Image 1 (tube, rainbow, N blue to C red):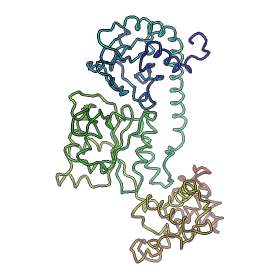
Image 2: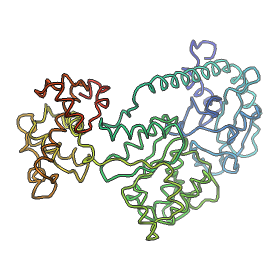
Image 3: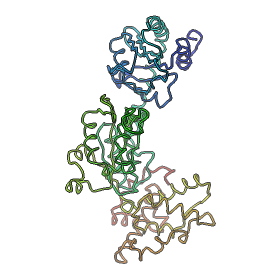
Image 4: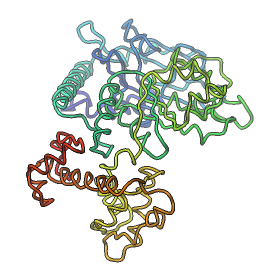
Length: 498
C-alpha cells in the first residue's frame, strides 16, 4: 500500500485500518507535531469518531504521546486503566470481556533526528504479553511513512501562514463577524471589542438583556480566535438542575452515585482545546462557583466520584442578564469568582438602543423565515416598518424575529402590512411601548431614521441619498450634522447588506 500510493497521506486512514487488522487492534492513530503552535494533534485515525479524534490534541510533553515526541522513544502501556500518564483524551472505553485489558503502543515518527509525529495502536489482550514484535513492526511502518508525514506537516504550517496573512489583509477592513447582523455605530464599537479580545485567551463576560444575542457574540469570539477549529460547547446554566450541574460540567465516574452506570465526559472535557460558553452564569449555585474558580485558576478538573486530576485547555466565556454586583451585596454570588470571570466585560446594546439596525434585521429575518418555512414573502410595507421602528422591543431581537414570523404567516399577498403585526405593536400607546415625547421630538426621530435608511441604501452617498429623499445635498448635510450621524459607518456596506 505504501509503495503503490501516489498520495499516501490521503490514504492514511486505509493504512491505519490495515495496521489494526494485522495486529487485531481496536484503534490506531497518527499524530503530527505543530511546532508553530507547540501542540501535537491527531490527523488520521481508525476506529475513532470525528468528535473523539478532535479531542486528541496534546501539549508538548503531555501524556504518553507528548512523552514519545519529547524523548523520541517508543512507549508500551500494557494496561491503560492502571497508568496515570495515559490521559485517554479520546475516551477509549474499557474492554467488555472479563480478564481482558487494553494496551497502548506508541512509537515516534522521526525525520533527520526531528520528531514529526507518532504512530500508535490500542490493542486488547490478556496480561503478560510481549509487544516487542508490534513495536518493531510499527517502527518500520513509521520510518516508511515519515517523509509523507513531514510533507503534510509542512503543508499544515503553510496553511497556518496563509491564515495569518489572510487575517492581516482582512485587518485593513473594518472587522465584522459573519454571524451577527448590524451596522449601527454601537454595533461597530462592539465589533472592535470582539476583534481585540478574540486572539487572546482572556476570560470574557457578555452582559445585556435577554434576547440581544449574547450567544452569537460568544460564538463570534470563538470563530475569530485560534481555537476556531476546536469545539465550541454551549451550557445553559439555568436549565441544569442543581443536583446535576456538577456532573454535566465536570463529568462523573462509573458508580459515583445512583444511576451512574458509565463514565460520563463533562462539558469542560468536551471543550478541551476550544471554548466553553456558560450562559446565565448568575444562576450557578455558590458551591459550583467555588469549583469553577479552581478550574479558571488551575486549568484542572476532577470528575464527580473520581480522585484523578485532569488537565484541560479551555477558554471560558460567560453571559448574564442579571445584576451580579447586586447579587454580591446579597451574598448570592461570590465576589472572587466575579472578578475572575469579569476580566473583559462586553455589553451588548438592546435593540431599542440601535433602531438603525431594525431595517437590516427585518430583511435578514424575512429571508431566513422564508427558507425555514418554505414561504415567499417579498417585502414589508413602509407603514409596518414604521411601527417596528416606534416599538421599544422589551424582548429585543428574539421578539423581533417572532413578530416577523407571525406577520409572515398572517399575510395573504406575500407582503407584510401594518395590520399583519400583533396588537402589541398596533396599540403601542395604550401598552406604553411607544417612545414618549413632544411632537417635534417624535418627528425628529422619524426624520433621523429616514436619513439613516437612505444612507444605508446608498452606501453613505450623501448626494444620492438627498435625491432619494427629495432634498438638496446641502440640506442633507445640515440634517446629518443636526442628528450627529456618522456617514462613514455606511460607506463600507456591501450590496448584500443593502
